[in-house]
Length: 102
Image (cartoon, rainbow, N blue to C red):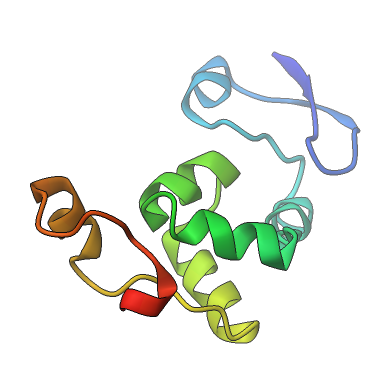
């Protein structure tokens, strides 16, 4: 099937199974690399989102890996919730997830 590259917009042939399997489609490895490197959300908004939902859910929202989020946080010195915070929150042991309580 013919589809367009999500990064550069060129058309290319892609198998139907790949169209279903992958959410983004790239014409080459270079386009894929460029497309995946463009993760740069607003710093303050992203810091707030880190304490609203688990990182795995943010990774699904932005369609990137969890490792990319960790690298982004380290690069920009963003504070992340500690390990197990979301499990404690879901179990009712803590009522809020805030940067000052971690």
